Length: 180
Image (cartoon, rainbow, N blue to C red; front, side, top):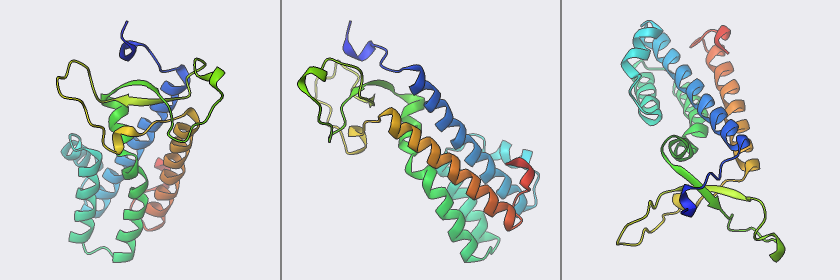
């Protein structure tokens, strides 16, 4: 059996993957609700029009709409700041949805020799899917590994950011507080 086909993911990894994806979804729905409020359209119409857009495309559409509707620049800046948190983790979200995962070792990991055959320390997305005649050269983003603690921290960051983003959006009248 090739190492790439082993199942390196534990139930905890899958739970955290699901939580990360769900908080991305909540950010996207909140962006759509803001677009509906600012444009005067109903939320369902906005959701139908933007359903096939990626997170980055929805983010750009929202920011363009805010500029078009002459929303105060301070408000646009605050919204952009809230969207920077999920934007930072877009590559991880894409890897969760589109990549296989293999064992990885964090660059700064030091462990005793007797632990080298021990439990999984981290996982990373598999971007080089075998059989290539040319070697795959990983970029910086491809070298990232994630421990359970790091995935948990990312999930918490997304969750806390969403709560703050929703509260701010409610405060300035762009959404109702009932959708939190």
